[in-house]
Length: 241
View 1 (cartoon, rainbow, N blue to C red):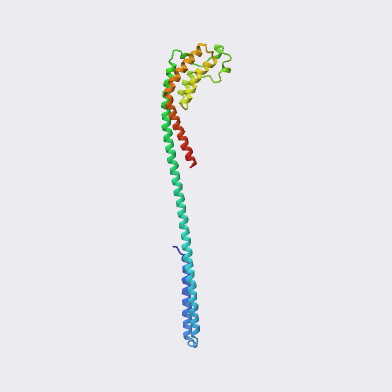
View 2 (cartoon, rainbow, N blue to C red; view 1 turned 90 degrees about the vertical axis):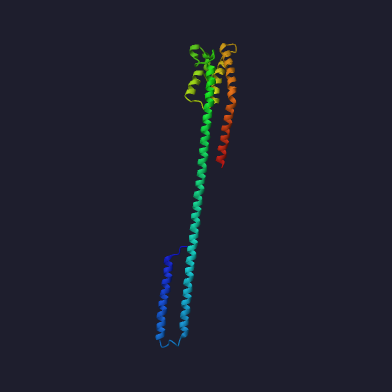
């Protein structure tokens, strides 16, 4: 508990002055011829001093109470600030931990996806080795082949070289994108050419072979996609928190 030192010093200074005044008054009373004639006057003086002393004591008590209240308020304010800081630090730690866990999970998921894409690359190379795969090896040269309406019929041309270049440049985000481009190669050929045309027949054969191999890889792709969906739900829950 802290008390205002200046206030206390002032109190005791007044008390000292009162004692001096009392001594002077007492000495004057003793030397006065009326000393023994007026005892009531001395009693009145003593009572007056007692009243002043009591008032000063009350002021000292008031100063002590005020100091105690201010000290208690300061302590409570300080404790509140400390609790607020600790709460914020705990929240920051939780956010950092969640971010670290999410980063670790995403890194592991990315590694698994790379393995799936590598396996898809193996399927892609097997299809390219087929004896009729050369038909789809390069982009269709519509001008040289006289296919003047080709780009009107085919909105998005696709071929093995384009897929291979994109794979080497890490242009695919996931296996589904690779699968979509692979199908597009054969679907374009089947769409533009009549069912009896050789290119249509070859495209249908290679598409069937591709789908057989893709079905073997698909279950693992689905599992990985479900994992990603689970991560998305967990992130949404964290945001709501």
